[in-house]
Amino acid sequence: MEAKPAWLELAERTNNFHGEHKSFIKNAHEYESFFSELDWIRKTILVDLDKHYWLDREQTLKMVFKRVYNFVIMQNPKYEIFGSDWPYYDDTDDIFEACMFTALCMFIHHSKKIKGIRDKNFLYKYSSYEYTKKGTPWYFDFDYPEKDSVGFETFTREAQSFRKMRERLFENRAVKIERIEWSATASSSEHEWSFYYVLSNLDEDLADTYKRIGNLYNGVSAALKFADDGYFEKLDKAYKSFTNKLKKIKYEKFLELQHEILAHICENETHYGINIYRFEKLLRFWNIGYEMTRLLDCKCAADEESRVLETSVRLNNVWFPSVYKKFASIESYDEMGVYALLFGRLMNQVVGASRLILDEFVEEGIFGTDGEWETLFLDTINQMTEKVFYNPREISSDLGFESPEAQEAFQRVLDAHVNHAIRQTHI
View 1: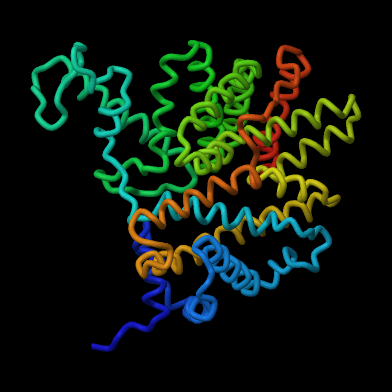
View 2: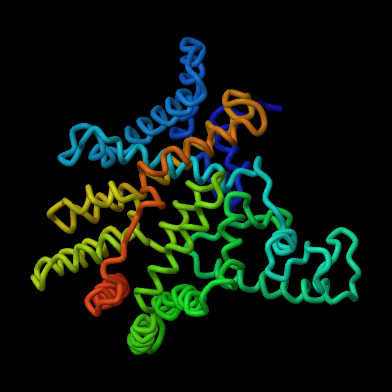
């Protein structure tokens, strides 16, 4: 039987990550040139590691990403705008750092080499019913439960509700990553999910705010999906519902909730960096605070306010502060949007290409034995967090939260994206 070419073996390493990869592998031959060149990069890295044997693991990891990043840049002439010749270039390496940080986070989160836990194990461990605590009415032995006990019956009902809640949440996400049942909750998101139970001990208004934020965009998102009969009437109805929901979210409570989440994130030093990344990607805390600050500084200048809101729309998917500020300095909205779009594509390609090489190098022990490589990746993420994001213990966005001006600015920033999406349907 003819041996597989090296490039195909490299491409098939995508099967070592959670997600649906059948179509990717099936169509890999269409990208044979890309994978062949990536395999050549892999080989040159191995040769250079032999030559530079004194490099430690941190330096090796940085070298791998530099090579992959430069390789991806060279694959698309449009990416050359992020090179040293682009008008907004500086020596901070913001773009590269954001790509490397994201790739490491995605590797940790999706690699099948890192075991997750079942929903039921998660629930047993974190539930506010404290099933693990002996002496309580809800205690039961997870491995040998008495199935007619109050604890086990309560647990069974809660497990069903928890599963349905997760399914509803994942249905609204743009990208669905399927995970097998025994590894349903990734270890990197275990602490994040435990906030679900922290909420029960917080102010009732905060729990209500958390729920309102989670449901805020559901109606508009559903209405935008299907251009059927009565499309614009449905959009108009969904937008009115959205604005009514938005008015019920108080900025004061939103801010308090965000600080509670950040405090919870900081309790887990191991996955601290990944959880900051997921927090900002999902809730855009820094973006909202920064855009509100700029809006409040405009002092009623309509053209300046328009600039802030249009920038907010164009950079909606840029959640790294330094990259956001760099792109926000671009005068042309169209050019700004192009930079943001290409940055997202570049980042995704660096994530996809780097993980194939990292996966092999992990198996070869280049980053240490089992456990050591994971610690290296997590430590690197945590060390990079304050550079690519901020220090969560120092960030402040109070902005005079009790003032009507702050509440209005908050609503205008959150409304801008929805308003823009609906206006686009009329073009």
